[in-house]
Amino acid sequence: MKPPLIKIQSVKKIYRDGSHEKVALKGVSFDICEGEILGLLGVNGAGKTTLSTILAGLHPCNGGDVFYNGKSIYENIVAYRKIVGFCPQKPNLDLSLSLEENLIFAGRYHLMTLDDIRDQIDRLMDQFHLREYAKSKAFVLSGGYKQRFLIARTLIHRPKLIILDEPTVGLDPHIRHQLWEQILDLKKSGASVLLTTHYLDEAEHLSDRVCIIDAGSVKTIDTPKNLMELHQKGRLEEVFLKLMQESDYVEK
Amino acid sequence: MLKNNLITKNYLTTIYYLIRRDLRVFKEEFWGKLIDTSLLLFTTVVIFGYFLPAYGLKTDYGPFLLIGVIAGFGFFEVVGKVSVMIADLEGDRTILYTLTLPIPSWLVFVYIGVSWAILSSIMSLLMFPLGKVLLFSQFDLMKINLFKLLLIFIMSNLFFGFFALWLVAILKKMSNLSHLFVRVINPMYSFGGWWYSWFAIYSISPILGYLHLINPLLYVMEGMRAATLGQEGYLPFWFSVAGLTIFTVGFAWDAIRRLQKRLDCIT
Image (cartoon, rainbow over all chains, first blue to last red; front, side):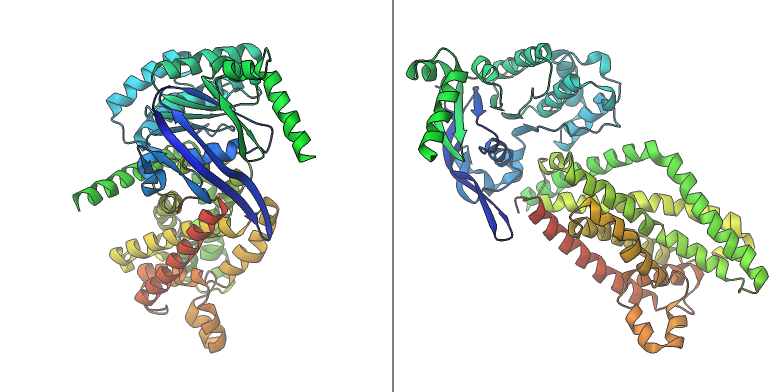
């Protein structure tokens, strides 16, 4: 296994709404290694998106810490954000700007030079098959292309950690499969990918390791192959269902 | 020291491009907004500069209201900005993209306030030549103190930007927006020196005069009129600047604090 890029240590998150409290993460710990795709799995409300947004430097945690290069990310959150690319569930593009303009501005926010941005745009347009839409406004894109472009924008500043929060949700199967290839390409480029997904076939196909979260705690973390062997199942989906049934049983 | 300067430069560069992005988006809406604003100015100036003086209204009421329209333009823009941002917070939350950029969260909100101020000031600025064309000899440009006008113009638009941000922070849902115009915007401009000067209301009732001082829009109107129509008959210019500064800083501080909490930002 490659050395860890990010160390997540006993991370807790509590949402408070007046007197009501909801514990979203109950002390989550694991590492994200350099150049790996780590699938983050769990049922709705398990804490996947909460963890993703904490790792994206968007929200603070209420306990524990996240380390990058041996230092807490909260010591210099702005510097940490430079190495992270966050692709959220809902597209948040500038719909009235062209794809090229969206990418130029995204690069500029990250203090890139125009030449560097142009090089990146060239590469990303080819990688994500978006060249024919480069001058089109973002609102003309279909759901699949929008999602592709959202990932392309996430990559403009060459982040070391790419967080993809349900990147293929709602897409046609053939578009999903095209996106899978592009996600595998990210790994080849040396970046680490945290992939949050509901699709277990997707996690099995793409992930070097999967982390299953249940009710705010890490249930298990291992390679899909090891998990299937350990639980004597032929597919990751079966492992997941077995683990969820076990946790339902424990709760009852 | 050098490191701090570099960090500040980096933050300012990111904010510069965020504002440039907003200006680029604004360019798409420019002509539509120009027509809307011109119509607003045209109707007000023609009625108060030409029609009503025929019924005995003082002729200098035209320039008085012209400055009110120019000064208050950003104030009417507030409703639109607030509704767009609340819809975003309830929907796609595109603001979260900005909050993942390499700048502190408080600076993201400062950028939004400043950007709104710049966009509303562009439209207001264009109203000066149109107002002069419409009122012609009634609007004496020689009375304008350019330095004071520039200062109060910047201050006013910054106030509108941060006031809008504060409204976003306190209005939790889109459904609350329906009350915004009737309960906030309308009383604020009606009792904010839009129709009359502070001295006019003070001469009727000193208590009412002092009560008007709690309305920040009064400082916008009085300051703008003092800078363009001459100091006589208005609150002292520097008093208006000081009042406006206090309100702007107060609204900005509270808006940033509330929005950081609401969006669960890293502080």
